[in-house]
Length: 364
Picture 1 (cartoon, rainbow, N blue to C red):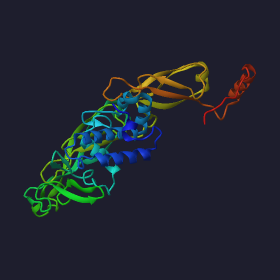
Picture 2: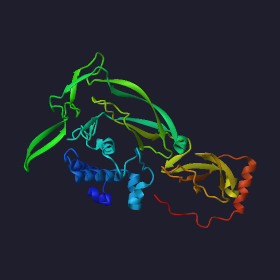
Picture 3: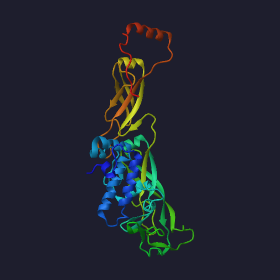
Picture 4: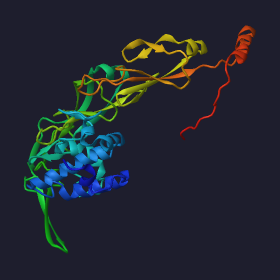
């Protein structure tokens, strides 16, 4: 497998903007509509998209820089209709995920937004929704009912062949360039590739022959997802004039937690303890994703010390392994004292040995 930086033709210290520009250039060069029937061009197109899906994500890029291609499967990768980009992408994944790279002025803008072609047949526009999940749902996995509003072909609509493309769904454009005449075949701009235009529609039906209908869908969210991951529910998007539906893209986002901060499969929490617990040690019940769990505080612990609770983090996607819970211990220093407490603390000044080296270098 080729190095992702070599695929995009950028250096390993390339900026995000340089990576984006390089990918856009390659995607335009090898786009299937520009190279119909060219298997090598399609392979190059997918290869560039895979490289971009990794190098455009700071976390995935860091894993790739450290572990190479073995690091690509870590963390957020998924398969079988679920993922966040990466290896083995199909054309629909690429179009739906990276279409915004090309913007409104792209010569392939109609392919990367709205309806698109699949094997010569048109397909309705995808629907993209966000689904918010709390940490407990992400930890266990959850089944959700979601309600969507989708466009479907209305009854009684009649069509005629598109006058622009003659019902083919594609038009051929010939352009004179310095290199000679260039022929390019693309989706018909009038019928968006369907080959049909509305001939008759009943009263109350939209000009495109569609009506809006509500639909409730059950989806099973796997344990361990994170913000930015998405699930593709096939054939649950908007229909086109042929009645062929697009897909539903469910993009996950995490709800903020009262205590925890997430970093991949690990979670972090800060625990404040009193001075006696820091000196003598203790066992303290603290929150975890699975409920309260006892944490042993070693005697003589220093403020800022990190304690690791193994296997108390999030599950890794499609794996039995789990991350850890990292506990940052902070020692509470009281701001007011009773007379008795003050005397006890003052007596410690004479009993405790002076700190031999109170200074140390910090990272800034």
